[in-house]
Length: 540
Image 1 (spheres, rainbow, N blue to C red):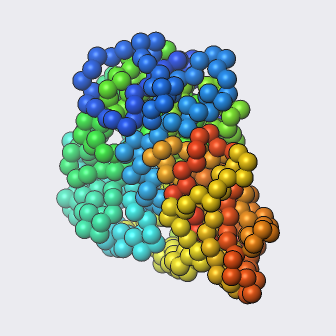
Image 2 (cartoon, rainbow, N blue to C red):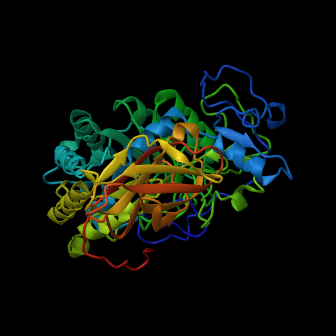
Image 3 (cartoon, rainbow, N blue to C red):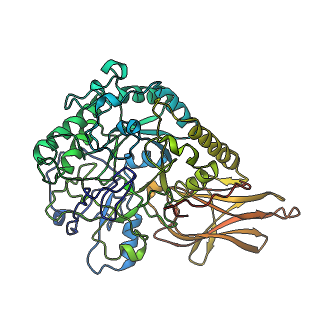
């Protein structure tokens, strides 16, 4: 997958110049429906100026408006009252999820197809969706997203919209359905299932005839969202090009959202919708300071439905948020609207997104995957790890071995806390700071800390310090900024004196947007893990 500097995620290894950006519109002043109560979308549409600012009234909300010149303390207080929807919360709690890039590119040894590939090329020799699911579940992943259609337009299900699908392939004499088999395997194993569907279709003749193609794409969505059980995530890639008529396709995103909302009301939509955003890099590394409440750009002419669970669907302007700072006080100071828009952190276990035999010796090591886990799940994100099946239709042995090694390290490190409190009780306050403490036994050692906020009450913590205290003496060993749903910190081993019976691990929250709501505080002993340098194009 390659994200160009101005385009939405466009999966493939090489950035194609035909993929174009969605032009941002001018930001609008928009409002907000309370998030603590979700009603059906039965009320009339209204404009932003007609809606009350419930954040200012002290209620939990999905979105908050900011007036020009509003003091930053008031803006920060509003941001603290923005909370996730039930769908966003369920998505966040999955923490670690899988991508399976599988399709025509698997058999052509390419990353981006051009749509001219013959369906006869698609013919896995030992397809086994249950093997995929067993491997991924054992690694700790809780959702599998399948590339049901990539940019080449080849459909992995027997669609009525085109002959460019498994129906025209020799696999199972044209009677196969990859989507059905993967969905069934997920359901049997208790994994959630999701679909990636590329709007860019380099095979479809109607692409570029915008109204006609939008109708076809909605029909494809309806097939996928009605024939395969519950869908937990719909993944929209924003790659965009010109059709055979030489015209750029104009995607009707709001109409796509309506199909998803109608047919799969529990699903989140990634990327080109206001549910879940791309973290901004394909390295697997999130920001050290990762806010889930960020400014959004909305259309000025949009209709808002305050009673809807998705009041901003019609107003949302798709576009990447790649700046290093998205949600700090400085970043939200000039916002017009703040929304809960959390980060999904994607990366492939291999250099490419599709399987290539020549990359069998380039699979990320267990140590590298552990580092990525701490830098994504451990930085208030959800880790989306791509594990591409091979031409047999199975996950390759090298990938399996690396995933097993990663899981063994994480299980050993995080299975048994040295000290833990869920939730921790406040141990008082140091001036304006909030303090939490957890007792730790004499002679114990630790090198990992876990912190979590109850994000049902918003994301609030802006700065904290971790210390080991004995009596009145405290020694700092780690510092951080945001916590969010989960923060994992690694540091040199800290050991408690064997003679001390009054040792505590303390977290002092120096700055927060509202009273902190810390839901978990724990320390663990991980031990040494083989260091792994960043590869080309990756950041640490």
